[in-house]
Picture 1 (spheres, one colour):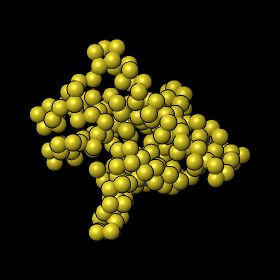
Picture 2: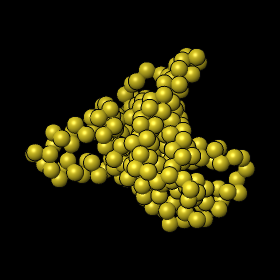
Picture 3: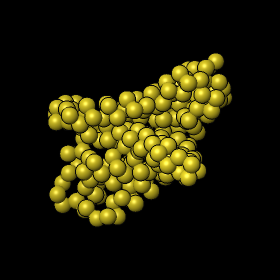
Picture 4: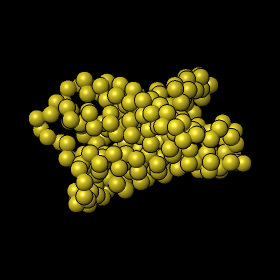
Length: 209
């Protein structure tokens, strides 16, 4: 899973080149923005799925144990994140490191509906290093997903007149949580019109669908 952090670091190193490349692509900036979020999301989910599959996880920490179904739900989740940051960027100005930190911290508290944070709390008394390691792991993965998505396009939203108010932090977190839930619900509602997603089964016996 930490491969996503490696990809994020590479994107940072070649950020200017990526930004120039994206600017030459056809279509509006909103489409580029959404495309990068879906790419970063698909990469994150594929790596997470591979990690669970290789470890034969009985209860994978995924939207869905089957890869293609997981990626479909991920369209709603990461599409919701894209909408959240798009709204925030229209009003506020962020640095790249801020998008990483905000999303990383949000991930610690909201990953698996708070299960990760509770696991950290339970582990703290017996093994604080394990607790911190788990938190840093989730922080790096979540931060990298959004950092990778916004790195090539962030400068196009960096107008100096935009607000740097501290309110930008709780606003974008609330948007991310709310719109991620809404996006997942919309995708699953749309999928139900075509028979729905497959039932959740063993990731080993039914890896893809």
